[in-house]
Each structure stands twice: as C-alpha cells, then as structure tokens.
Length: 121
Image 1 (cartoon, rainbow, N blue to C red):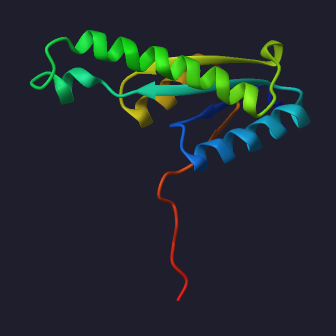
Image 2: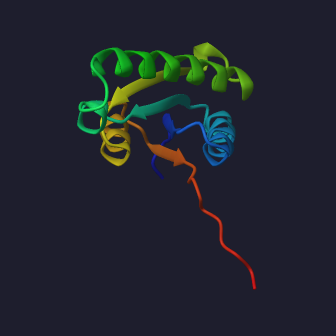
C-alpha cells in the first residue's frame, strides 16, 4: 500500500470546503502526514479587465485575503503550523488544484463541493 505523506485540501471557503478541510485534518493525523491548505484565485484579468482599471491591484487584494482566510481556516480546525502550510495560486480552480497536487507531491486530495445538494422526494 502506498504511504500517504502529503494531503492537499483545496478550499473555496464554503461550508462544504470547511467540512472537507476537517476530514483532511483527521486523515493527516491518522497517516502522520503534512497538510497543505490551498486556494486558487480565478484569473481576474479575463473577467474584470473591462470593468476595473487596475486588475493587478484587485488580484493582489484577493490573494492577500485568501492567505488570511487560509491561516484562519488552519487555526479554526486546530492544525499546528508545523504540520501544515498554505498556498495561494492563480488560475482556474480545477487546473490549479491539479497543478498544486503535482507540485506538492500530494498523495491525497480532499475538496468539498459548493451546491452539492440533492432533494429527496
């Protein structure tokens, strides 16, 4: 069986992603693995360049807020800084998570889904 050393939890800061981060924390404890909390900031230049004069400032602010939110998430789920680190990158969510998983040598990726509800009739 493959050893699990690095667990990546990708978050969009939704409730589902918070639950996923808690599951990732438990898995990191069980496998004595490092936890990597990551967020991908959408490329704003493609979306907002015609609306905002300085997209770079908007992206910089989004990255700073994401870094603060990741630190708060680790604190909230009670992960010691020595057992985890955070990463914020730019791009599309799916491509960014895959890129980070490869870059960080993640053996396991844990992510929640927004709007993943179904009605029961």
